[in-house]
Amino acid sequence: MIGGIHQRVTCSSVASLAFFSHSAFVATFEARDVSHALSDSNWVNAMHDELENFERNHVWDLVEPPPNCRPIGTKWIFKNKQGENRMVVRNKARLVAQGFCKEGIDYEETFAPVARLEAIRILLAFAASKGFKLQQMDVKSAFLNGFIEEEVYVRQPPSFESARFPDRVYKLRKALYGLKQARRAWYARLKSFLLKSGFVMGSIGKTLFLLSRGGDTLIVQIYVDDIIFGGSSHALVSSFAEQMSREFEMSLMGELQIFLGLQIKQGLEGTFVYQAKYTRDILKKLNMGDSKPMTTPMSTNTALDADEDGKAVDQKEFRGMIGSLLYLTATRLDIQFAVCLCAHYQVSPRTSHCQAVKRIFKYLKFTPELGLWYSSGSSLSLGGFSDADHAGCRIDRKLQVEGVDNALIKREIESQWTGLIALLV
Image: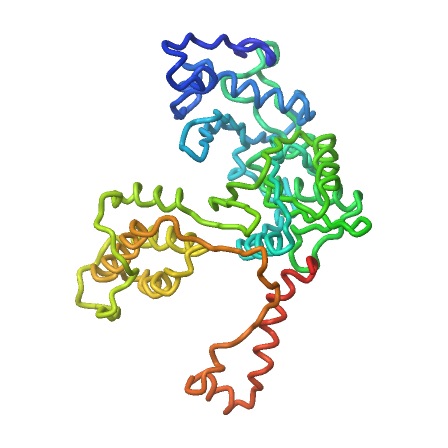
């Protein structure tokens, strides 16, 4: 072991404190592996931070390996956390289990619900309409809070093996990142805590919780270890933050600004949601940052088809571009039609399809700051409809032939969307 778990490494001196003063506390490079991380005191301290979290949370016990024990390997993962200005604000070293080598005997259930982006958008719209200021908190080492019922053993962390007992293994008390049941264990722990605290879980969105106290309301939305919350009473919001801090080790991040790649600005008149940083990042990744901007996402004179005689392009690269754009449609509804049209040709993409996709990126270069605006005076009424409502639609004629009432489809669509905010309203 490199010193004791609580022993810190003295940071090297910084040549100029006036230039990026934060560099005295974080490494500006991202470590490739353990040997690379050990060359910098900041990364060594980040690894000590992780092991200290394990000790505080009583994650494991160092024991003699039982007979026929096949311990799971562990691995260090290194990641730089960046702020909105792309400056490195934190070096995060995560010790994970190599869950890919696990057998079914080590777990029975792995499922844990995850909030959809549509549910997040509905929550933002609801909060804007009601005048809530949404806050954000992050659970430090969230998966280390989840209890596991199975008997699981893992090897000692690479380069941090015990000098006295190098042949021993760790028996897990709680979940470890990388275990297939880690998400389920953490969600079960958090859900149990919220329900005991008086919250009611959503009937459709299992990651949405509501607390009503007197005439005040508190809403909590969970996305793995990120928690969004807000309410009509400042006292109720503060009480919840204190309650969570006592139960878990939390980082209170203040007003919600960045969530799942979405940039969020909350004001008195409403909430603006956009993905400018993500847009610039994918343009830089595709080397299109200097491309000529276009004023429309698709040419009105171009009709895409299979183009079987056209030159084939790299399928993996084409699908990667489509995937990047599909995530961007969460706030950019203006490109949704063009992206979905190009996505039809992912099986056998041609040069014409690739040019159409690049045109969308050139349009994004022209409009990187566009997004969704939720006004504080907007109504929460929902309206569902079907494309089959169009009188000349072939689907409509098919439904008439088969004797299906089109009004049933409308009601089904309305019920699906209404169900997402039924708990809120």
